[in-house]
Image 1: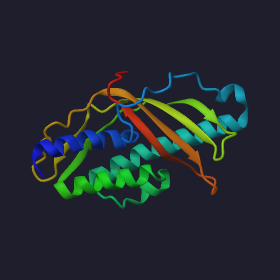
Image 2 (image 1 turned 60 degrees about the horizontal axis):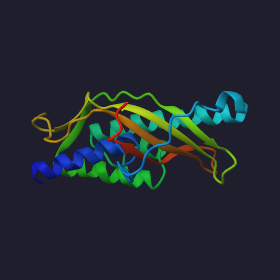
Image 3 (image 1 turned 90 degrees about the vertical axis):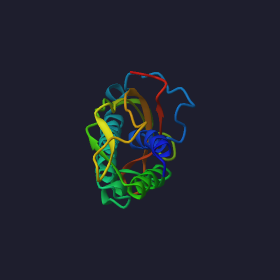
Image 4 (image 1 turned 180 degrees about the vertical axis):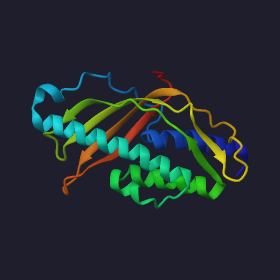
Length: 181
């Protein structure tokens, strides 16, 4: 694949690894509202804590899968659900196919922006300020940067969903690269 196409793919990868690119740049995220977890009782607090833990696990699993790259990395299914799981796996597979990897560190500052525990299934919305300036895409063999794979600081949103087995999984999200934070 030519470098310019891999560069475009790298922008998509950052989006997926942050919180899914399905609606990247298309929608305005909700304003960061103070979490209602503290005032809504222990169920809301527990849901917020579990959803944020799933989000942190998702970011770590995505980083690990992209460092190999390994689209079947077992931690992906521990923290992600479809449709996001499939999109992340496809993107990691693209890295593998084109001989690229991710290195470095991504800085994340997630907060719960909304809870809907009455929904079927219950959901928690997460808003994050991602700093991917230290999270680089490089060619695995040469360790040279992939052209067009620059990072930055921007808003990302994600949805954690409570599944029947009791796990909170990150099922969807969006990156808002047009909204710096």
